[in-house]
Length: 133
Image 1 (cartoon, helix red, strand yellow):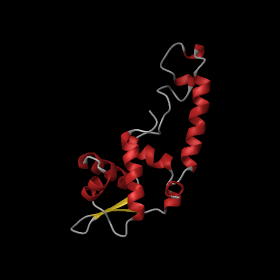
Image 2: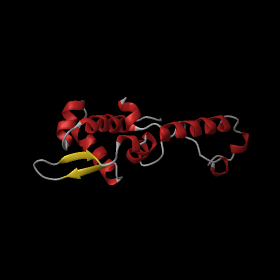
Image 3: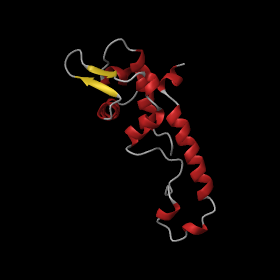
Image 4: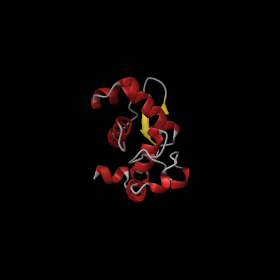
């Protein structure tokens, strides 16, 4: 599946954070977006670990964007929260690494591979700034 709930919640959180004047904590974001707090907290920590957000501790702590929205692309966001690049299909990215002994007979793989390539390009070019427009 290309867009999971984790990716959706990450993008929604980035939209809200891009408009915030100060750090927002996971509880505030969770309430505003109606997202389970524990799930959202993991997503935000992952985005912070991957250099998209910065987290601040303390009473006035929370999360802020550390990159300009035009420098945050959706492939980066989705790969961060999913732990791997988003995939259109559950197949090997290379026909030579296919776990099936029937890979050479697969007539669908070339089409799916081209589709995946186009989606990867689209997501790498689509920025948070584009979504905010």
